[in-house]
Image (cartoon, rainbow, N blue to C red):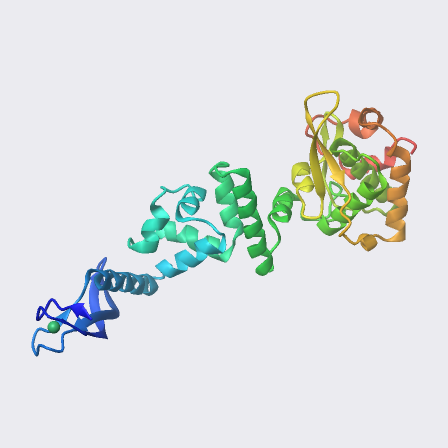
Length: 337
Ligand SMILES: [Zn+2]
Protein backbone atom coordinates (compact mmCIF):
# COMPACT_ATOMS: atom_id res chain seq x y z
CA UNK A 1 0.00 0.00 0.00
CA UNK A 2 1.24 3.47 -0.71
CA UNK A 3 -0.08 6.94 -1.23
CA UNK A 4 -0.46 6.95 -4.99
CA UNK A 5 0.72 10.22 -6.56
CA UNK A 6 -1.39 9.54 -9.68
CA UNK A 7 -4.89 9.24 -8.22
CA UNK A 8 -4.16 10.57 -4.74
CA UNK A 9 -5.61 7.50 -2.99
CA UNK A 10 -3.91 4.95 -0.77
CA UNK A 11 -3.82 1.56 -2.51
CA UNK A 12 -1.62 -1.25 -3.78
CA UNK A 13 0.49 -0.35 -6.80
CA UNK A 14 2.15 -2.69 -9.25
CA UNK A 15 5.94 -2.77 -9.64
CA UNK A 16 6.99 -3.41 -13.24
CA UNK A 17 10.28 -3.67 -15.11
CA UNK A 18 11.21 -2.99 -18.70
CA UNK A 19 14.25 -2.46 -20.85
CA UNK A 20 15.00 1.22 -21.27
CA UNK A 21 17.61 3.23 -23.15
CA UNK A 22 19.58 6.23 -21.98
CA UNK A 23 22.70 8.14 -22.99
CA UNK A 24 25.68 8.14 -20.59
CA UNK A 25 28.90 9.92 -21.52
CA UNK A 26 27.85 9.86 -25.15
CA UNK A 27 27.14 6.11 -25.17
CA UNK A 28 23.69 4.62 -25.74
CA UNK A 29 22.98 2.33 -22.81
CA UNK A 30 20.26 -0.28 -22.41
CA UNK A 31 19.31 -1.05 -18.82
CA UNK A 32 16.52 -2.45 -16.66
CA UNK A 33 14.12 0.26 -15.59
CA UNK A 34 11.69 -0.25 -12.70
CA UNK A 35 8.47 1.74 -12.28
CA UNK A 36 5.13 1.65 -10.49
CA UNK A 37 1.71 1.55 -12.12
CA UNK A 38 -1.52 2.89 -10.63
CA UNK A 39 -4.24 0.43 -11.58
CA UNK A 40 -6.96 2.93 -10.70
CA UNK A 41 -6.08 5.14 -13.68
CA UNK A 42 -6.06 4.21 -17.34
CA UNK A 43 -3.74 6.84 -18.82
CA UNK A 44 -0.47 8.37 -17.63
CA UNK A 45 -0.54 5.87 -14.80
CA UNK A 46 3.22 5.26 -14.38
CA UNK A 47 5.38 6.79 -11.67
CA UNK A 48 8.68 6.29 -9.80
CA UNK A 49 9.68 7.10 -6.23
CA UNK A 50 12.98 8.73 -5.28
CA UNK A 51 14.54 5.45 -4.20
CA UNK A 52 13.37 3.68 -7.37
CA UNK A 53 14.86 6.50 -9.41
CA UNK A 54 18.21 6.05 -7.61
CA UNK A 55 18.06 2.32 -8.28
CA UNK A 56 17.38 2.93 -11.98
CA UNK A 57 20.23 5.40 -12.16
CA UNK A 58 22.60 2.88 -10.54
CA UNK A 59 21.38 0.18 -12.94
CA UNK A 60 21.97 2.42 -15.92
CA UNK A 61 25.44 3.36 -14.71
CA UNK A 62 26.34 -0.26 -14.02
CA UNK A 63 25.12 -1.17 -17.51
CA UNK A 64 27.39 1.57 -18.86
CA UNK A 65 30.31 0.22 -16.78
CA UNK A 66 29.74 -3.29 -18.12
CA UNK A 67 29.52 -2.02 -21.68
CA UNK A 68 32.82 -0.10 -21.50
CA UNK A 69 34.62 -2.65 -19.30
CA UNK A 70 34.68 -0.79 -15.98
CA UNK A 71 34.07 -2.51 -12.63
CA UNK A 72 30.45 -2.24 -11.49
CA UNK A 73 29.63 -0.73 -8.11
CA UNK A 74 28.88 -4.23 -6.76
CA UNK A 75 32.27 -5.45 -7.95
CA UNK A 76 33.96 -2.54 -6.20
CA UNK A 77 32.08 -3.36 -2.97
CA UNK A 78 33.09 -7.04 -3.26
CA UNK A 79 36.74 -6.12 -3.89
CA UNK A 80 36.80 -3.84 -0.85
CA UNK A 81 35.08 -6.34 1.44
CA UNK A 82 37.55 -9.06 0.46
CA UNK A 83 40.19 -7.10 2.38
CA UNK A 84 37.90 -6.15 5.28
CA UNK A 85 38.36 -2.45 4.54
CA UNK A 86 35.92 0.41 5.01
CA UNK A 87 35.30 2.77 2.10
CA UNK A 88 37.50 5.41 3.74
CA UNK A 89 40.30 2.91 4.51
CA UNK A 90 40.47 1.60 0.96
CA UNK A 91 40.54 5.18 -0.35
CA UNK A 92 43.40 6.01 2.04
CA UNK A 93 45.30 2.82 1.22
CA UNK A 94 45.19 3.76 -2.45
CA UNK A 95 46.16 7.37 -1.79
CA UNK A 96 42.82 8.70 -3.01
CA UNK A 97 40.46 11.26 -1.46
CA UNK A 98 38.62 9.76 1.49
CA UNK A 99 35.21 9.90 -0.23
CA UNK A 100 36.38 8.39 -3.53
CA UNK A 101 35.39 4.77 -2.97
CA UNK A 102 32.11 5.77 -1.35
CA UNK A 103 31.21 7.78 -4.47
CA UNK A 104 32.15 4.93 -6.82
CA UNK A 105 30.10 2.44 -4.84
CA UNK A 106 27.00 4.60 -4.75
CA UNK A 107 26.72 6.83 -7.77
CA UNK A 108 29.68 8.27 -9.64
CA UNK A 109 31.27 6.38 -12.52
CA UNK A 110 34.98 5.95 -11.85
CA UNK A 111 37.60 7.47 -14.18
CA UNK A 112 39.43 4.83 -16.15
CA UNK A 113 42.70 5.61 -14.33
CA UNK A 114 41.04 4.74 -11.02
CA UNK A 115 39.35 1.74 -12.57
CA UNK A 116 42.70 0.45 -13.85
CA UNK A 117 44.10 0.46 -10.33
CA UNK A 118 41.07 -1.43 -8.97
CA UNK A 119 41.27 -3.98 -11.78
CA UNK A 120 45.00 -4.49 -11.15
CA UNK A 121 44.28 -5.19 -7.49
CA UNK A 122 41.54 -7.59 -8.48
CA UNK A 123 43.95 -9.58 -10.65
CA UNK A 124 46.87 -9.36 -8.20
CA UNK A 125 46.35 -8.58 -4.49
CA UNK A 126 50.05 -7.73 -4.17
CA UNK A 127 49.33 -4.45 -5.98
CA UNK A 128 47.18 -3.37 -3.03
CA UNK A 129 50.11 -4.03 -0.70
CA UNK A 130 52.57 -2.06 -2.84
CA UNK A 131 50.21 0.89 -3.21
CA UNK A 132 49.54 0.89 0.52
CA UNK A 133 53.29 0.90 1.25
CA UNK A 134 53.99 3.52 -1.41
CA UNK A 135 51.44 5.81 0.18
CA UNK A 136 53.16 5.56 3.56
CA UNK A 137 52.16 3.62 6.66
CA UNK A 138 48.87 5.27 7.50
CA UNK A 139 47.09 2.50 9.37
CA UNK A 140 47.49 1.49 12.99
CA UNK A 141 49.69 -1.55 13.56
CA UNK A 142 46.65 -3.74 14.17
CA UNK A 143 44.86 -2.58 11.07
CA UNK A 144 48.00 -2.98 8.99
CA UNK A 145 48.62 -6.53 10.25
CA UNK A 146 45.01 -7.42 9.48
CA UNK A 147 45.33 -5.99 5.96
CA UNK A 148 48.58 -7.87 5.32
CA UNK A 149 46.96 -11.08 6.54
CA UNK A 150 43.96 -10.57 4.25
CA UNK A 151 46.27 -9.85 1.28
CA UNK A 152 48.36 -12.97 2.05
CA UNK A 153 45.17 -15.05 2.29
CA UNK A 154 44.04 -13.78 -1.11
CA UNK A 155 47.48 -14.40 -2.62
CA UNK A 156 47.44 -17.96 -1.34
CA UNK A 157 43.87 -18.52 -2.61
CA UNK A 158 45.06 -17.42 -6.05
CA UNK A 159 48.06 -19.75 -5.83
CA UNK A 160 50.42 -16.81 -5.63
CA UNK A 161 53.44 -16.25 -3.43
CA UNK A 162 53.09 -14.38 -0.15
CA UNK A 163 54.10 -10.73 0.24
CA UNK A 164 57.36 -11.66 2.03
CA UNK A 165 58.46 -14.13 -0.65
CA UNK A 166 57.62 -11.72 -3.45
CA UNK A 167 59.53 -9.00 -1.66
CA UNK A 168 62.65 -11.16 -1.27
CA UNK A 169 62.40 -12.33 -4.88
CA UNK A 170 62.16 -8.74 -6.07
CA UNK A 171 65.66 -8.17 -4.65
CA UNK A 172 66.91 -11.06 -6.80
CA UNK A 173 65.38 -9.98 -10.11
CA UNK A 174 68.89 -9.31 -11.43
CA UNK A 175 70.21 -12.62 -10.07
CA UNK A 176 67.89 -15.16 -11.65
CA UNK A 177 70.66 -16.91 -13.59
CA UNK A 178 73.23 -19.17 -11.91
CA UNK A 179 76.48 -17.18 -11.78
CA UNK A 180 79.56 -16.91 -9.58
CA UNK A 181 77.66 -14.18 -7.64
CA UNK A 182 74.98 -16.56 -6.33
CA UNK A 183 77.25 -19.60 -6.27
CA UNK A 184 75.68 -21.01 -9.44
CA UNK A 185 72.37 -21.48 -7.70
CA UNK A 186 69.12 -19.60 -8.19
CA UNK A 187 67.68 -18.29 -4.91
CA UNK A 188 65.89 -21.18 -3.18
CA UNK A 189 63.58 -19.65 -0.57
CA UNK A 190 62.23 -23.00 0.68
CA UNK A 191 65.77 -24.19 1.33
CA UNK A 192 66.71 -20.87 2.94
CA UNK A 193 63.79 -21.14 5.38
CA UNK A 194 64.81 -24.66 6.33
CA UNK A 195 68.48 -23.71 6.81
CA UNK A 196 67.52 -20.76 9.02
CA UNK A 197 65.26 -22.93 11.16
CA UNK A 198 67.86 -25.67 11.41
CA UNK A 199 70.23 -23.02 12.75
CA UNK A 200 67.58 -21.57 15.08
CA UNK A 201 66.92 -25.03 16.45
CA UNK A 202 70.58 -25.79 17.12
CA UNK A 203 72.09 -22.43 18.04
CA UNK A 204 71.20 -20.82 21.34
CA UNK A 205 70.54 -17.09 21.00
CA UNK A 206 70.64 -16.77 17.25
CA UNK A 207 70.62 -13.08 16.39
CA UNK A 208 70.49 -11.41 13.01
CA UNK A 209 74.15 -10.50 12.48
CA UNK A 210 75.28 -13.95 13.57
CA UNK A 211 72.69 -15.63 11.36
CA UNK A 212 73.82 -13.65 8.31
CA UNK A 213 77.50 -14.58 8.87
CA UNK A 214 76.57 -18.24 9.40
CA UNK A 215 74.56 -18.26 6.18
CA UNK A 216 77.58 -16.93 4.31
CA UNK A 217 79.86 -19.60 5.73
CA UNK A 218 77.28 -22.29 4.96
CA UNK A 219 76.98 -21.12 1.36
CA UNK A 220 80.70 -20.69 0.82
CA UNK A 221 81.56 -24.07 2.38
CA UNK A 222 78.84 -25.66 0.29
CA UNK A 223 80.43 -24.04 -2.76
CA UNK A 224 83.88 -25.36 -1.76
CA UNK A 225 82.40 -28.81 -1.44
CA UNK A 226 79.92 -29.05 -4.30
CA UNK A 227 80.57 -26.04 -6.61
CA UNK A 228 77.10 -24.82 -5.64
CA UNK A 229 75.96 -22.55 -2.84
CA UNK A 230 73.16 -23.94 -0.68
CA UNK A 231 70.63 -21.09 -0.64
CA UNK A 232 71.40 -19.02 -3.73
CA UNK A 233 71.72 -15.83 -1.69
CA UNK A 234 73.96 -13.07 -3.05
CA UNK A 235 76.19 -11.40 -0.44
CA UNK A 236 77.54 -7.89 -0.27
CA UNK A 237 80.42 -6.41 1.70
CA UNK A 238 78.99 -4.57 4.73
CA UNK A 239 80.46 -3.19 7.96
CA UNK A 240 79.99 -6.39 9.86
CA UNK A 241 80.99 -8.72 7.05
CA UNK A 242 79.06 -10.47 4.31
CA UNK A 243 75.39 -9.50 4.27
CA UNK A 244 72.84 -11.08 1.90
CA UNK A 245 70.91 -8.83 -0.42
CA UNK A 246 67.36 -8.44 0.90
CA UNK A 247 68.37 -9.36 4.47
CA UNK A 248 65.39 -7.51 5.96
CA UNK A 249 62.98 -9.41 3.75
CA UNK A 250 64.63 -12.68 4.81
CA UNK A 251 63.59 -12.07 8.41
CA UNK A 252 60.03 -11.41 7.28
CA UNK A 253 59.65 -14.74 5.48
CA UNK A 254 56.53 -16.66 6.47
CA UNK A 255 58.45 -19.54 8.04
CA UNK A 256 61.04 -17.40 9.80
CA UNK A 257 60.03 -16.38 13.32
CA UNK A 258 61.82 -13.32 14.49
CA UNK A 259 61.39 -11.35 17.71
CA UNK A 260 62.54 -7.79 18.18
CA UNK A 261 64.44 -7.37 21.43
CA UNK A 262 66.16 -4.45 23.11
CA UNK A 263 69.83 -5.31 23.53
CA UNK A 264 71.14 -5.34 27.10
CA UNK A 265 74.17 -3.15 26.60
CA UNK A 266 72.78 -0.51 24.24
CA UNK A 267 69.54 0.95 22.97
CA UNK A 268 69.42 -0.79 19.61
CA UNK A 269 66.76 -3.28 18.70
CA UNK A 270 68.15 -6.69 17.85
CA UNK A 271 66.43 -9.54 16.07
CA UNK A 272 66.21 -12.89 17.77
CA UNK A 273 65.48 -15.76 15.39
CA UNK A 274 63.22 -18.37 17.00
CA UNK A 275 62.90 -21.97 15.84
CA UNK A 276 59.59 -22.56 14.06
CA UNK A 277 58.56 -26.05 15.11
CA UNK A 278 55.92 -26.31 12.41
CA UNK A 279 58.47 -26.31 9.61
CA UNK A 280 59.62 -29.70 8.35
CA UNK A 281 63.44 -29.76 8.38
CA UNK A 282 63.63 -32.94 6.28
CA UNK A 283 64.31 -30.92 3.14
CA UNK A 284 68.05 -31.03 3.92
CA UNK A 285 70.26 -33.77 2.55
CA UNK A 286 72.83 -35.47 4.84
CA UNK A 287 75.57 -33.62 2.99
CA UNK A 288 73.86 -30.29 3.58
CA UNK A 289 73.32 -31.09 7.26
CA UNK A 290 77.00 -31.93 7.61
CA UNK A 291 78.03 -28.58 6.17
CA UNK A 292 75.62 -26.69 8.45
CA UNK A 293 76.81 -28.70 11.47
CA UNK A 294 80.42 -27.72 10.76
CA UNK A 295 79.41 -24.05 10.77
CA UNK A 296 77.36 -24.51 13.93
CA UNK A 297 80.30 -26.17 15.75
CA UNK A 298 82.58 -23.33 14.74
CA UNK A 299 80.35 -20.40 15.63
CA UNK A 300 77.51 -21.43 17.92
CA UNK A 301 79.24 -20.30 21.11
CA UNK A 302 80.86 -17.20 19.59
CA UNK A 303 79.42 -13.84 20.43
CA UNK A 304 78.40 -11.56 17.56
CA UNK A 305 81.58 -9.51 17.88
CA UNK A 306 83.79 -12.59 17.70
CA UNK A 307 82.13 -13.91 14.57
CA UNK A 308 82.29 -10.45 12.98
CA UNK A 309 86.02 -10.22 13.83
CA UNK A 310 86.50 -13.68 12.35
CA UNK A 311 84.81 -12.63 9.11
CA UNK A 312 86.86 -9.41 9.00
CA UNK A 313 89.96 -11.55 8.72
CA UNK A 314 88.79 -13.21 5.48
CA UNK A 315 90.40 -12.22 2.17
CA UNK A 316 86.84 -12.03 0.84
CA UNK A 317 86.25 -9.15 3.25
CA UNK A 318 89.66 -7.48 3.10
CA UNK A 319 89.71 -7.31 -0.68
CA UNK A 320 86.20 -5.98 -1.27
CA UNK A 321 84.70 -2.59 -0.52
CA UNK A 322 81.42 -1.49 1.01
CA UNK A 323 78.47 -2.58 -1.14
CA UNK A 324 80.57 -4.76 -3.44
CA UNK A 325 79.27 -8.24 -4.11
CA UNK A 326 81.37 -10.91 -2.42
CA UNK A 327 81.19 -13.59 -5.08
CA UNK A 328 81.98 -17.26 -4.62
CA UNK A 329 85.45 -17.29 -6.16
CA UNK A 330 86.60 -16.29 -2.65
CA UNK A 331 85.74 -19.84 -1.57
CA UNK A 332 89.15 -20.82 -2.96
CA UNK A 333 91.00 -18.69 -0.42
CA UNK A 334 88.85 -19.02 2.65
CA UNK A 335 90.79 -19.06 5.94
CA UNK A 336 91.43 -22.55 7.28
CA UNK A 337 88.10 -23.54 8.77
ZN1 LIG B 1 -3.47 5.39 -7.94
